[in-house]
Amino acid sequence: MIINYRYSDRNNFPYKADFTMIASRSRVNNYRVPQVKKYPIKILPTTAIYGDNGVGKSDFINSIGSLKFMATEGIIHSLYRKLGGYNSYSGCSYTIEFLVNDMIYELSIDIERCDNTNAIDINEKLVKTTSYSTKTLYDVRGRDQLVIYEDEKYANVRDWFVNTLEVIDGPRQRLNPKDGKVYICDNFGIGLHPIRTKNMLDIFLQYCTHDTRGQFIFATHETTLMDSLSELRWEKMLRPDELWLIDKTRQSGSQLIAFSDYVETQNVAHRGDLLKHYNIGRMGGIPHQDEMYTIYNEEETK
Image 1 (cartoon, rainbow, N blue to C red):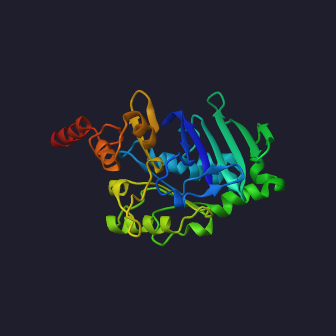
Image 2 (cartoon, helix red, strand yellow; image 1 turned 45 degrees about the vertical axis):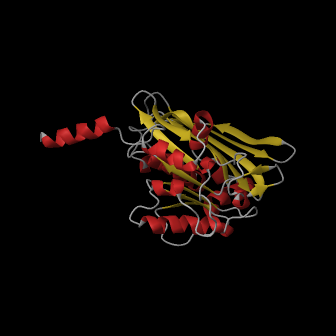
Image 3 (cartoon, rainbow, N blue to C red; image 1 turned 120 degrees about the vertical axis):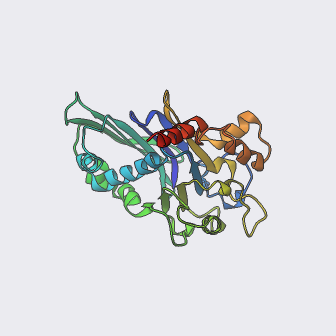
């Protein structure tokens, strides 16, 4: 399971996007929130990420796919050739905290381009946390291949990226949290009827318990999920801490915002009010009317 994830790059996320799957103190849908009594923490089984087109939702989701590629292939240079070469690259940082057999690991990879050349500087670090201690397993710099890929001592951690973390392109089949996989999906619901989208998520959540370890993290435009009711339980499908949005400004770049923070600061009492606040733009993450009119006027003058 993913516990925390932090990502930044100088082009889209100049400030670190801090993303967490740790559950808040909310008791909503508590029956389906996995518990790790060893630490103890509760980890959310799902998260929906909203935002306008072009604000960075796909970049954020794809960054997790890039991290999986690096951990499973080991060669950093192959990644940047795949992403379009060094000319478009200026540096990025990944830190992921995840659960492997109820043990917590944190992998950090910081990559910087050196002096406008094709050389890159890589800092890689792996930390293991148990219920009684935290230990740095390694902290290295200046390698072309990652230790997580090359050293068999860390095969169990690498296998998590290989066998558990899955980046999917729009699920068309039932996802089962009992299989222990972490599914990452961009554009969930695209091309599907809203009822089908809702039912797929609802079925996944109905199989979640305190003991399951599966997760479904997705970006979507399907706002009806914010306020949808479960078919089997007369309650909201998603908790406030399972909702995030990405907003973007010319001054600050893309920013990741937790709905639960907005609920606390604005004292939003009802989930229906939360959806209303999002739709009218109080939280950000929706198209700006002036931009839409600018695009329309540009098309009219062609």
